[in-house]
Length: 417
Ligand code: ADP
Image 1 (cartoon, rainbow, N blue to C red):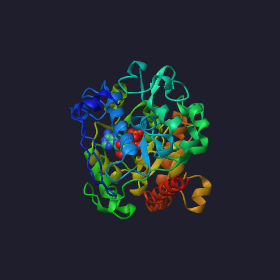
Image 2: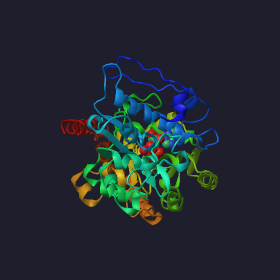
Image 3: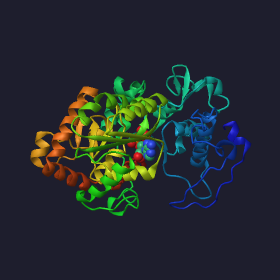
Image 4: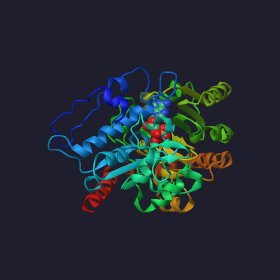
């Protein structure tokens, strides 16, 4: 077992029922100032491999030994942090009694790699440090450990499931995933429709129809120090990284601003992007930026914005476009991953049928985004069409009902095998 987990023996409840949450209490691993993954200066905790191996080890231990009379039917892990569950299960229990392992990829860019010097510290077998198991270009990869071992692999949209098997999007894991295509499926994420509900949002003047957005827009313009422009107020809420296409946005921005559009942006991340955004905002009257993480403000932005921007280079599912749909804040998104699956592009066929909910652009370049800003403004100034798109957006089922049913079907199928 991981050395660190050995140091603090864990106490386990002996009676477990449906809906119980088991918490691993290991203060030497988890009780520290800073974030879940990083210290206060944004550096990864150096013992992250041990911290998450301990979590995986305990899950595998529960699978192998159960708890009192309870034993899980299925173990479901997410991303590299839970990637070693399958490996530890095999070390702890014979093949005949393995609990089926479902693994979900939320972002294949994070491989959970660490040096093979840690094989002992992580209680991993040296003879399994091979490309068939968890070796990835000379490193231990906990993501690869899961991809080679899981009984079912899911990811958070159908399009991303396809993209993952291509060199362009697979981030080096595309070959592994192609070999496992038979067990890979995409199930789109949902959002919490109680937390994200424009009719019951304490951060806003609540509304049930798009007209209710007007006073929220005024309040948001005031909060961001933006003038009272007649153009569309676009909002963007994001980590600021290369993935999120912020550089494309900066290049395409004139197409929006020249038509009276505005941008209010909330985010944090890459210091260079933060500086570039703040510098640009200091010279543009119709652009305003808040650096930081602020959930309450993100609600006010959804309520007051006319459109939500998601110009990501890749996006496994994306959540802000789903909030946007629910709030009648029309999504303008790159045609990739979950953004491709959740937005109905306002092309002429969708507009003629009256089913459009947003705009998509492709390829994911500044030019295509600039063209999309032009289309967005055309649609926005045609208030009848815009209103219809907002109402369609607000009717989309963005909660968990259908996705939960898909997970349930996958579990049932796995258990019946
Ligand atoms: P990712 O998981 O790649 O960061 P998603 O769109 O899937 O992107 O999820 C991001 C979540 O984090 C959303 O709920 C979004 O509203 C929230 N978020 C991101 N940045 C901020 C921020 N600066 N302030 C508030 N919420 C944020």
